[in-house]
Amino acid sequence: MPSPEEIVRHHDAGEVVHVGAHPTGYVMRIVEHDPTWSQRYAELERQISSVLGERLLAIQHIGSTSVPGLPAKPIIDVDVAVADPVDEAAYAPALESIGLVHWLTEPDWHQHRLFKLLAEPRVHVHVFGPDCPEMVRHRLFRDWLVDHPEDRETYAAAKRSALASMEATGDDHGALGFGMRYNAIKEPIVRDIYDRIFRATGLL
Image 1 (cartoon, rainbow, N blue to C red):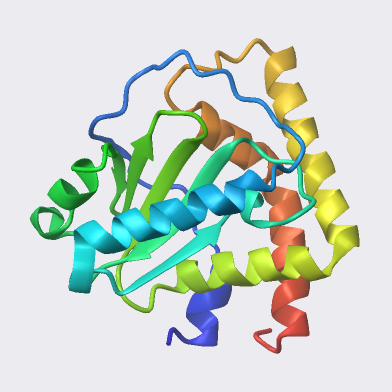
Image 2 (image 1 turned 30 degrees about the horizontal axis):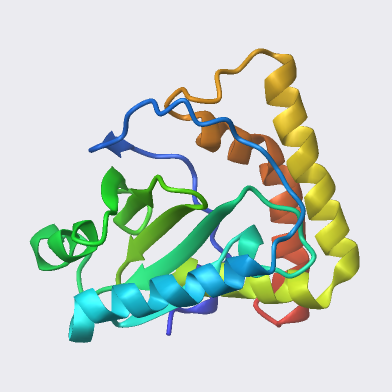
C-alpha cells in the first residue's frame, strides 16, 4: 500500500513518448451516463483477465464512465496493475491480442503505459505497477463522486466547460494531445475535489 504522502502528491506533466499514437479524426463529446458502460467494463475485465492470467495483479473500472449519473466521454477507462510496466514484453503482446494499441508511455508518471481500443465505445487501458498510488487516487475519486452528488455536478460542469473552451478556440479534436489539454483545463476543479477527499479520509 502506498504511503499517504505518495497518494496525495499530484503529478506534474512530464515526458510523453508516443508509441502507436496517431491522429484518428475522433471528435470528443460528453454524453449522459449510459448504464451499458458497466457491462462493457465487465466484458473487458474478463478479456484482460483471460489474456494476462497471473500477470494481472489488479484491475478496476475508473473515470467518469464508472460513476452512475455522471456525464462522460464515452470512453471506458480501465486501470491494470502488472509486476513491472517497464517490462512491456511480459504483457503488451497479450493486450494487443485483444485489439489494444500501445498508444503512449509516460515514464515520469509511475511508468504509465496507455493502450487504446478505437472501437465504440472507446477503451483506454492504463497500465501501472503494483501498489501504484495513482490507482488508489483513481479509486478514491470514483467512490467520492458516487457518494457526493454535489461534487459530481461540479465535476460535470467542469468537463462541459473545458470542452466548450477548447472548441471555442478551434482546437482540433483529432490532434495528438487534445485529451491532455482538455484534462489540463479542468485540473483545478479536479484538485479541489481531491483536496476534499484527502481531508475527509485523513490523508491530509
